[in-house]
Image (cartoon, rainbow, N blue to C red):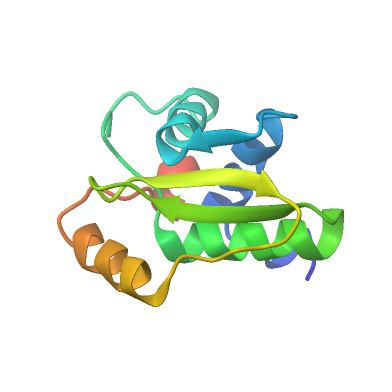
Length: 114
């Protein structure tokens, strides 16, 4: 997969992910804050990252940079991202729960980062 195959929001997520450096574990809130800062977004203070976009970026990272990530979700349906020895996606139940909760969330879109 080439970087050009990523959408603008996915490229912003990738940049935010790479900005974390060697940090081992962080929440999607940290990535969202970095995206808002880099794109100079004044609104959408509580916007989150779509699971589909994050999963595509993590797949890109694993394919191109040999970095592996584990995804977990807390009780508030916030994603936690952790560098790990092997990739570990969300459980099917957590995946469905997150997708259902995204219907009521404000999600970053490609229009936000152009």
